Image 1 (cartoon, rainbow, N blue to C red):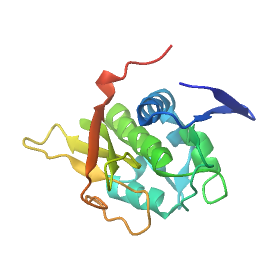
Image 2 (cartoon, helix red, strand yellow; image 1 turned 30 degrees about the horizontal axis):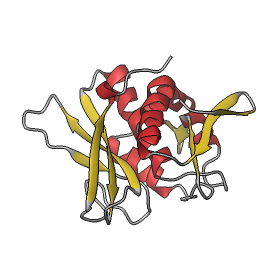
Image 3 (tube, rainbow, N blue to C red; image 1 turned 180 degrees about the vertical axis):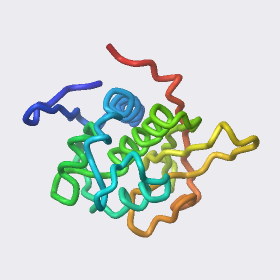
Length: 179
């Protein structure tokens, strides 16, 4: 991960916005390292681990969108994101991707599901502007990649926002854990 800023006992990365590939690596790292943060939270009295994929999607989608400061990329571990949800704390597409990756990892680790995830970076035009998760269930033969983009309140489960001119796909196996 890049430069780390201390917030109480937690940290988040904060760095100049240089390459979307750094953001992709940070998303994978933060989800891999801190997916258990989700075990600390509930939604309407239910532990997040007990939510369905669609219920978690709707929960994250309902959190207010707050863009990062100009020319800065802020990404945080799930605990920081959920503790600061619906405040002025940055909470954009990369943060939602971290939470989504963490949720799928939680389902795989605790319930022995077999979800495969990947990060998709897109742009309506020829530049990268957006990041979200796609998933598939490897236990279902012929399972297709399904968009899991819970960035905006008007997003629809399983659908993308637009047909992108820019699209790159990244897999966690190509982003080894940083020491």
